[in-house]
Image (tube, rainbow, N blue to C red; front, top):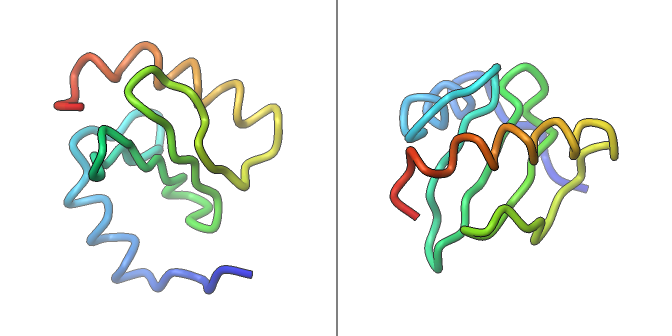
Amino acid sequence: MARKLSELEVRRIAEEAEIIVCGYAFTALEDSLVRILDLKHPDCFMIVNSEAEIIETNMAPIEQRIVLELCRRNLKFMDV
């Protein structure tokens, strides 16, 4: 089980994010991957590739669908 992020860590992630959409911080990682963190519930995350395909997640299925749609609409604004 992943440890809970501190408020300071969440703030740092938000500041380093390339974009924030509807409370989700999108951060480019290595190998054309993107981490998407729910800033309201920082224990929920998703990692996708540049084609918006899920690599790893712990989000509920309904949240996955919502975040993937946000991802598809906004990846073009990122350098991935």
